[in-house]
Image 1 (spheres, one colour):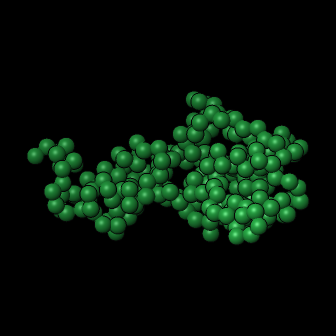
Image 2: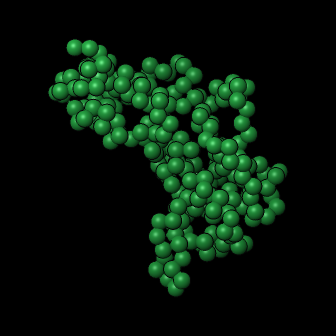
Image 3: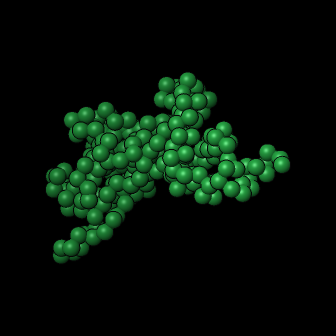
Length: 220
């Protein structure tokens, strides 16, 4: 039986050897742009691999790449390979990319949603002390960082906003519990330029597509 048939047509639970599992996971995770959950990864083996085996194989795979410029990490959306932060300077030399620039108003709004969610637009305005423009909400929604999750049961039924799994993935976090305290929120790396954006509730965004390297971004 050929190697290809072993990899593509397993017939029983013992069809996959440990090194095969690692090799398959490595191939899929290196060639898939989005994180893959354990449920997604189980589909590769048509139910012939349990979660314990998958986690053990992912640990082996992570250790295999430990000393390289690429790392395997677990985020809210699942598992993915990405370049290590210290490699970004070299990637930028090959394909320089200027990170998106967000206004202070956008970043403050995102911070309020992240730490107080679910919140309405009125909640945000009460905390910030100024009106929240529609453009701010649209900017955060288009970036995939916030979404509406329902409506508050009060007159007017305002929308409730919360952060998304994509927001956590961009911060390399698995859950909201891993967000730093508000006192250290400025140290998060989500790239906002204060000098350009301290003026008003308007924002400019450079949409140049997602960087392949998943460079950490800077909030506030």
